[in-house]
Length: 166
Image (cartoon, rainbow, N blue to C red; front, side, top):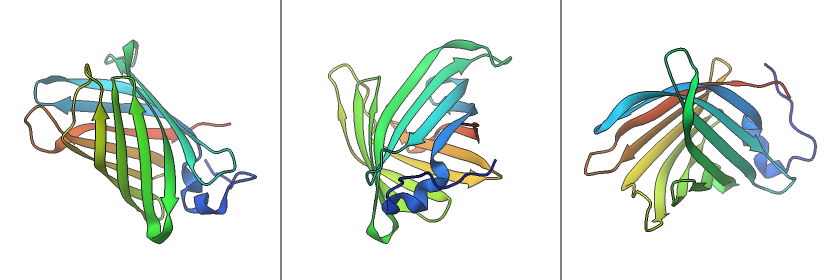
């Protein structure tokens, strides 16, 4: 599905304009000590004319027939492009965690590394993490690697999402 640059988009966001909209699809997850799982995901990027993107992601655990079992993780945040293709991202999670990410964007490819985080007293700490976003065959590909619970940095969740008609 083709996209157009939205009206009123701040010029700093032009390199990320391909992301704006709502994306939906399915993914998988696994990690030591966690049963492998499947999930449905909806991601929305939008703007209000200022020089950052608003970000919202919701996931639901699903069964083999893609029926929703229960709500999983929610993320909200802001994506700030900076000079020299640097991207700063701030995220907050329903699980009691807040994180700052720094990375680079290069066309339809974004690589992020966890810079620092905050964990509420009941939240679960992540030692390090990386994220990859890319436009692959018209779909938004997402991969999230984490280091937690004494395990080294490794794959945790990945998905492929289709752009939704507005």
